Length: 189
Figure: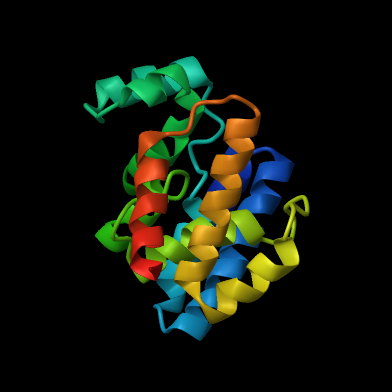
């Protein structure tokens, strides 16, 4: 399936707002790929499909992951919304015929991050946060600049803001997100 076919199929599945977001992430990932020397087509496809399972209701996300023997953490059982990343990677393979493991991994970790991310992983994680249709969050202008100058600094900045936001809300911080933040903070020391 080529990217034009993927886009048409995705448009049928997602709400107009989610589809617009996915196009924004693809565009942003593509521009970042040029700057950071990553395969442009891979970045576009990963950005386009990163939320391709987002429309699945949360209770069904758990069922669909269990059916496919996808590991579900305790945090994901409590917050099934987080499963959309893993499920989107599976849907990209099953429903959009994506075979490239680098693309699938970038999709799978775009919500929580992970230690030792590839450059493509970082681009999709960051593009999801900074794409033009996103609500402007605190420090967005600085973060958007960092996205094109220093991926690791940008990643730490976003992770710090996300963790702080969740802690202020007294929400659970996924242990993988915390591990990712610690890993990249240690690398900056």
